[in-house]
Length: 109
Image (cartoon, rainbow, N blue to C red):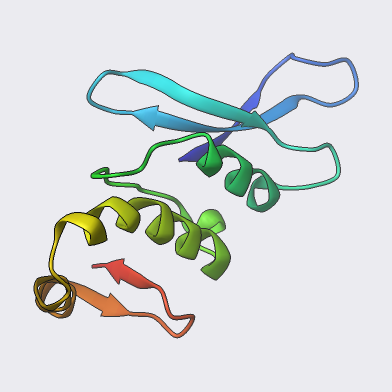
């Protein structure tokens, strides 16, 4: 996930978008326009709703690493995993590979 400003895309102000980029296939999976008087933080939740995050690795820069956005990523990606994996195994995996953050979100380090 990353924000991009499209140069020469407007007479007054350039178009700013956030996009979901797939490195493996070298293509944009989805994109969302950032409102004129806003920033990437408000557009990222809309973009995330368009994506199926099950079994995917999501990378995001510091601008998008807000607690609400991280929670949305975790919630969207964990739903299918919880249906397929017993809770005790999930707990063992999370304590071994992840560290909790103050906002209650688990981030991979």
